[in-house]
Image (tube, rainbow, N blue to C red; front, side, top):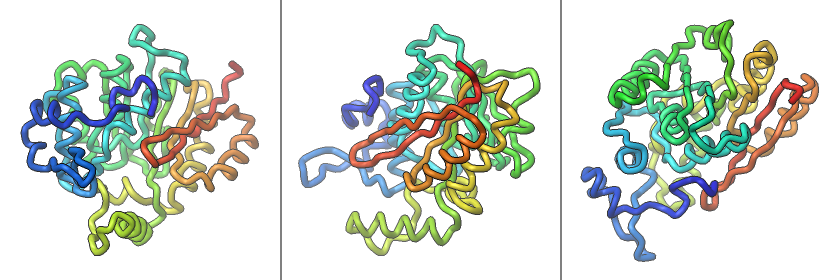
Length: 287
């Protein structure tokens, strides 16, 4: 994990339970005599997130509708810290504006960007229920109202158009795109993970998730290609466009497209335990 990530040393479950008592019923001691939770149970991850937000980010309340994506926070925080390095900022004294594409009901990236670095954040989503849930999470904590704005993308074909206004400038955009090309592919991938964890037979998706959060036509690669193509129209309003890329085999085609559009790009690798992921960042700016 990133050196500035407060979660890089693991979870202090005693402290987390003290700050959020409902987490206690999900905590157990594993065969290595270490306290942990079952990360394949959405309710356990939900209460872990609530405890982390209370303990480290002064978020007194946080909610998501049942069935929405609820991934662990440490990896989300790593993305935020990597963006700070990309922009060469390390504290909240710098005025930074960011846009989270596909903010989801959890609103995690804008919350972390605001709380860790004091950034001004906009989050967009195509699903109205997710937009309303994200707005509700902002209203639950008063000091977020002035730093985060949530917008509805009414045209699913567009990514930036209709969200970025003519007079706006963003230092960066970020996105955690849908990984899978279909529901069947998402279920297959989840069952394989559960089998590897000796939990074969379970059918629930890790951490929950709605259709638009987990899959889209063409999957991750096609979504990012579409994002790259549309980003060209906003090259003068955004310094850096970024997206998570879960599968490294998607990179060559994405890089080829970026070269074709005469952009500058970087690949930033991230590690969380045995999991490796990467951020693809590109810019049309000369500097």
